[in-house]
Length: 507
Image (cartoon, rainbow, N blue to C red; front, side, top):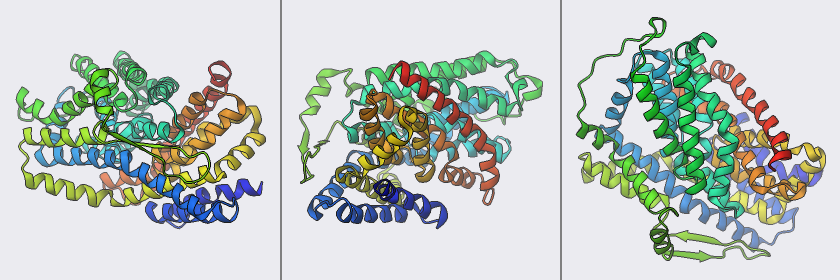
């Protein structure tokens, strides 16, 4: 019991510092890192040199490939914003249909999913919410639908980094973990568009005349996501899913005659040429092409690039893991290259790239510190035995019913940190230990953590703050929390049922 409580102390501190003391995430995470280091040495009798080596291994894992992907994704978005490409993309989406329900689907669900897959870190809430407000939607409503939409893509956000990180941390196979996570998410991906339309239409009456479009919007998202997860991995799963959903929803929505009850006035804008549209999408098209051509689907290229890598062992204690640094074939490199080429196509100058890179580094500096501290903390907790102590108590206390609580643990991690990646890093080891103890498929159990991430992301204070900042809604956090909480809790109850019965059948 004492080891369980002490093992949880770095996580309890993180929650208290973020929500109680209102500290910024990087300061709270640094405190957790220090606490884990002290406890590992004093309570778990870990050597100081081993503890330091464990922390360094976490730092290196954070730097490459995680931080490089985060920087590249946000840099791409900033370049597209600078060149006006993002404005063209917005205009393309809003010109499809004047039915408010279809517009909300296109912006909050399809485009929001695309932004989560590409950049993440709040862009998938902030940008769609501000777009909806600019079209005349109520600000809090805009935040609500974007928060609902943003949950399920989160495990595959920022070019799949939460799932990739979780797979690397636990030495699991990326594609298999991605596939199981996508299968668990299928019901919730289908539910999201339905809930979004019902919120827009004030209940079940909102589904009138758009049932087909709504179901197609969900199906065309999840089916490609499952296939890409299975055969490629996490990196492109939500990007391809959201693009397919966008295309299907655009095609069906353009043929939909708006119901007078839900019709909106959309301002006439200058017609866009095919050339302008291709220029606007060029960085994202290039990312898709590069990541696809260098994936395992094109094995000759993948195998050739695999030689440009280094494998190192950092931890100095017993049973060390190893880190593999892919210097060329890593998503961050291809995303940066796509941003540079795509930005050039859009007319960006060298000074524009320099400004965007500077702005990206300034914007993300605290996030980078947070990631370094969280990964360092997780590695120290894992190697010292703190994770094992937490898992052992949790499993003995809940027994065969542990899977019911697995998604709630994932949700807690994201609620506290605002990050699906951080949730996986903090609790992935606990889920892995639970799988071993209960003799459950580790992919199934670890994926339950990612499943819970979707609900935690909806109601995370960080997500709420980003959403409200984008619509100048300062001070309305509690009101927005009251609106989103029922949806998140509804998802968590369904997730617990899926986890318990699914473990018996598939686990």
